[in-house]
Amino acid sequence: MIATLGAARALPAVSLDRKLRVVMADDDRNDQMLMVMATDEARAPIELSFVDDGAELLHRLSVIGSLEDLPDAIILDLRMPRLDGHRTLDRLQAHPVLWQIPVVMFSSSHRYGDMCLSHDLGARDFETKPSSFSGMIDFVTRLAVIVAQRQPYEDPAGSLVDPRFQRALLGPDLVSDMDDLLFEDLDLLDPSV
Image (cartoon, rainbow, N blue to C red; front, side, top):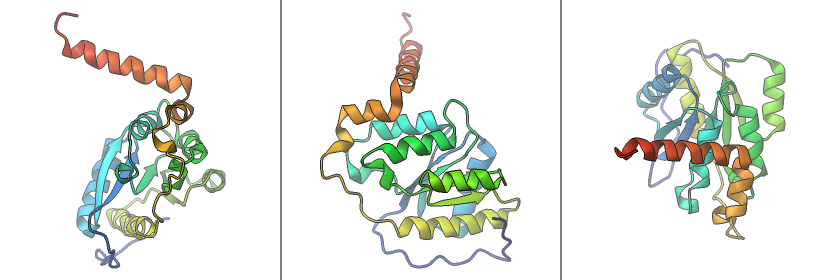
């Protein structure tokens, strides 16, 4: 959706004792920067963090041990390296806890099929990246409302910390990729290697 605003709109009151935690998976640094600027301009009660693709997002989520540390929402780009938005969304929806995190697909795609598939896979909303900064502010405003309306997370079986679900979430391909990246990082830190 592309919308233009003359000025930033005031957000509806959100009764939280903290900012809403939102993770954005998008490999475009310009989009990340615009999201930060729009969030500041909208005075949205959102704390942003960024990952470059779906694989990095799933890895980050897989090491979270408590419901209180989960993000309140996820913004997913469709076209990303390693693991695209639809495949990432599919894995999130298959998880016994992470399916509860509201996901907003945020893409430059105008394809009706991309929107339909996103909704079929469980996305809360599909937004076409706006062409103006005021459109980005409008998106952030809608995002804050969507996130503030989410329900508390449920984890009756303690499945968030179950290693079987971590492996299922990441799959063998991403587990080995992340292990390789971790070992590369450790090698960089060790001058004797």
